[in-house]
Every structure is written in structure tokens, then in C-alpha cells.
Image (cartoon, rainbow, N blue to C red; front, side, top):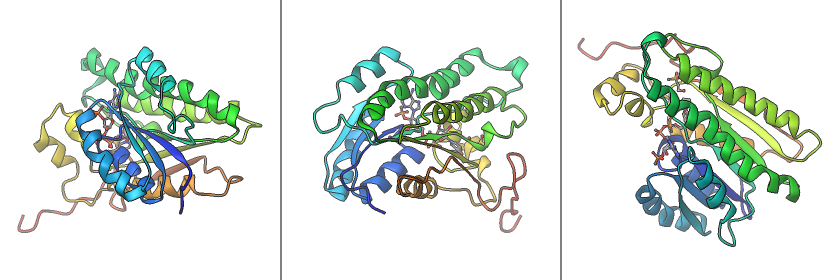
Length: 260
Ligand code: NDP
Ligand code: 8X3
């Protein structure tokens, strides 16, 4: 699976699924724009990926919630990085796991601003030029949470249901163009996601994956690489993928700890 000659922009490339997608794309020979807020991480990753891909890699400090920064930075990409062939809208987060009447409005705003509005800002900034060039693939990282609402997931699930609807809507509106749109909907993936959800409580985060084998970022990156390397006439619209130990958003098989 080869991405030689292609340029990919990955949002949220500083950890987890986004970082894994960047690695997989680099191994396939893509030129990369790595976007996230933690520039230090991107600057550490960039030379490693450039060595792997033998292509230039651009670390781009970007908060997808900042509409004018998204517009300005993506309009001002340097020569050699302007023609984005693959956009992976991955930047996203959950905050809290509370009953809706007790939820934190700050947490809600952060999720909706990042997962929904941020994805829209980046899409709006990149897709028109893809249409003009007559080529492009948009991969949105949704979630099982966008299909199956789970207790206390309320606003996070709503944000991912929006990603699902927006992905469908984008494909409808691109009918007649050669552009492709894919939504990937993972179940439990062991990344920094749960630590972020629980505001840094690592012990609580670790319990999410206790006694079961979760997916890794690399598992999702494999799938993303697969969809973007299908022949041009093949558009994989969506993929729901869970660990074998998970059968729905709320049904997870956990083994007791040895000696317990
Ligand atoms: P991580 O927390 O490991 O990664 C999240 C990434 O998003 C980081 O690189 C972070 O970078 C970036 N990010 C967050 N907010 C912003 C922002 N405002 N602007 C730019 N980048 C931002 O979690 P995952 O890798 O698991 O999450 C990636 C995506 O996968 C998310 O959309 C998540 O909802 C989705 N997902 C995760 C699942 C899981 O179980 N882990 C399952 C299903 C979907 P930085 O902080 O440097 O800005
Ligand atoms: C992340 C997976 O089940 O924690 O989207 O919502 S879940």
C-alpha cells in the first residue's frame, strides 16, 4: 500500500490514533502535515517520520477550535504542502462521564467545539481546493459512540453522532466529484483518550481497559491506510471496528486479574 506522491494532513497527530495514522502514512511514503496544539511533540515526531517516508514533514501548531487560526494557517501552508490529497479529521476528545443534568457546561463546549466545529472548520478550509484539483479523500474519525449512545456519554455521543451525519452529508454534497469520504467508528482504543476524559486521572483511565484487550492506535491506522489506498472508484463509506472483547458500546468481556 503506497502513498508515494500524496500529501496527507492529520489533525491530532501528537498522540494516539492520529500519531499512528501519521506513522502508517509515513511508512507508505506520504508527505505529511502534522497538526495539533502540542507543537513540541510534533517537532519530535517530524524528523522520525521524515526519515521513514523520505519526504518532508511539516509540524503545524493548530487548535482546531480556533476558527481564524484554522483559516489562516491552512491558507498559508508552505510550498510543497499546499495540495492536500488526504485529510484525516482525527483531533477530538471526550471530557467527563456524568449524567447530563449534572454535566459540566465547560466540558460540553470543549467537546462540541473540538469534535464538531473544529472538524467543520478544517474541512471547510481544505475541501474546496480538493474539488478544484479534482482529487481528495476525507477520513473522519467518528466513534461507536456516534451509533450507540451509552449511559453518561450524552454529549460526547452527540458530538460523534454529528460526525456521522456530517460525513454522510459531505459525501452527498460531493456527489459528481471524484472526492471520497470515509468515516471510521472505533470502539475502545487504548490511547490518551480516557486520561483526557477523566482530566488526567490515570488510574481511572486504566480501569477502562482493565481485563480486556483494547484496540491500539496502530490497529485504526491500518484501517485508515487500507481505505485511502483502495482504487479511485472504491469509496469505503464507513467502518465500525471494535476489540474482539467488545460487542457493543456497553458490552465488554473482562477477564479477572490473575490470582483474583
Ligand atoms: P488522544 O487523546 O490520544 O489523541 C487526541 C488527539 O487530538 C491529540 O493529538 C490531541 O492533540 C488532539 N486534539 C485534541 N484537541 C485538539 C484541538 N483543539 N486542536 C487540535 N488537536 C486537538 O486520543 P485518541 O487518539 O483516542 O483520539 C483521536 C480521535 O479518536 C478522537 O476524535 C476520538 O474521539 C476518537 N476515538 C477514540 C476512541 C478511543 O477509544 N480512544 C474510540 C473512538 C473514537 P493536542 O492535545 O496536542 O492538541
Ligand atoms: C471512544 C470510545 O466507547 O469510550 O469514542 O466512547 S467510547
